[in-house]
Length: 496
Image (tube, rainbow, N blue to C red; front, side, top):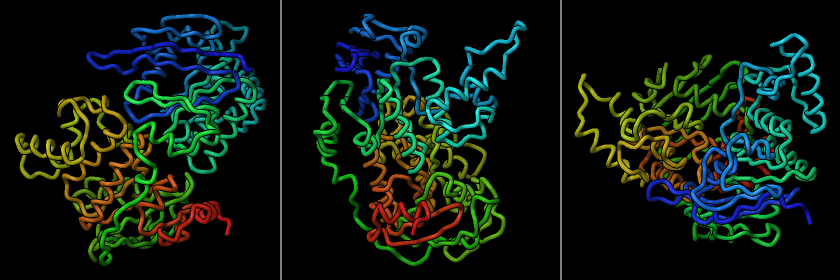
């Protein structure tokens, strides 16, 4: 029997009249990957914050390596060996890899106040060699890939001699190959005796690396399963009370004639002579590894970056798009993959976020506030956005409701072309289903939908056709109903 690292008993956290966690129990053993799953709002984030010392529980006890506490401070959590890697990367881009590893515990030279950078580089290399990590310790973090940044966060945690590693959606920004590498690193860490609490909406990851799976629903503990003795449908039913099959089926829209077309789009070395068309009522999926050029192509289509040549047509008319505002006015909108950085105005209300595009498109210098309120209310009802009211700060919503808020913003513009970049990134299964229905409804209403996705079942089940991008080029276009995961993966990595 492995050593018991963590035992949580009866932990409760109340915000106002709402119990974010209700009598939660959980344990973790050395060398174990214990996965925590549940819909957004299930209490996972609150539980993480309690273990990391960011939030104090209102009841319950936490036992860590024989030490019992009612609550932890952040410094106590670190001292006891708990390290948390959040979904949003927390690194300083302008510093080197080594500087980030030793931030707060810098290696000092004999001269007071001076950092011994040579020793930091040497020790950083030693730590990463031990973990079989090949990142250049002298590189600036801003030059690292998303996968390398996630890996660096793990290195930072292990440098602090963490015994318990909490990983919150660590692969949400990674592609297939990057995810495989991170999965292997997690397995290696567990083999070294580190206890890992792993949180992910990607159930295939849960079953690949998990030893046990604990389900949370509405702040309450539901069940803990041995991963080897349970299937995906059982886990999903425990989470939301529904079967897996409903999440990956759609009613096909009637596909009309060509509505949107691009010809010979290029940008630097990341998008290379890409051409395709999307029909009226069609969902055109774009698959590929991270770095294949999909997001960069989307940026070109809405004027975030300027294409080096090429032509874009809507209903046969040539478009000239120089900015996202230009794109919206001409009927093209982008629902970004990074909703917190590029999609949402975090200090603003739900109303202000939803009404943004409508107000920009309105004529005259004055806002029609009653109409604005009516439109926002209509969108909240239509998309079933769970809010306390229009004035609620958008950052207080769950990930799924934040994503629906961005979609609502563009639905009010009556655009013709909707580009979704990773539409269900970081949202729970229930919210995924709702977003899928929205995409299908857009197609049924005659819109042209371009959907970039790294979720293979999502790509196959929602798309009518799938375009494959690799190294900036559109290499294949195939009917989605004929696509198989194995075939797509081969196309993604260039194995024919």
